[in-house]
Image 1 (cartoon, rainbow, N blue to C red):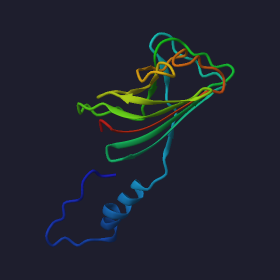
Image 2 (tube, rainbow, N blue to C red; image 1 turned 60 degrees about the horizontal axis):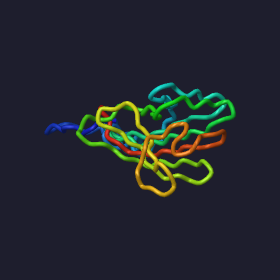
Image 3 (cartoon, rainbow, N blue to C red; image 1 turned 135 degrees about the vertical axis):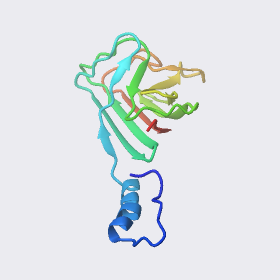
Length: 165
């Protein structure tokens, strides 16, 4: 997909191919199906191991705007590592002086509502949740915070951000 319209020249004959590239192909890209990707799941100290859990990602990129979704379901052989978790983005974020905030949900008994944070010039995003059920302070998700993760728990993150290219 191009980022800007074509520069037309006086006297130029417009062809069906030009119109397809400038109009049809642009609309097709905007309304295209999402693309699957496999995010990498890491932790600050010791990386988790997915085992028989599932981790999938999907994204739609239009120009330099990317909307993505990550879905993690832990399994009976998943190990949780140690330290704050991060998940790979489909594309590096722009270094535009902005931090992007998306939605994060942790289904671990009750539903925990949080955020995924994407810093400028980042290749990963980190989910943050309240540290307990009675505070609004947030801390990075780990195997033991805000709850001890176990088989069948699910993390869902959806976010939109500007990509570096």
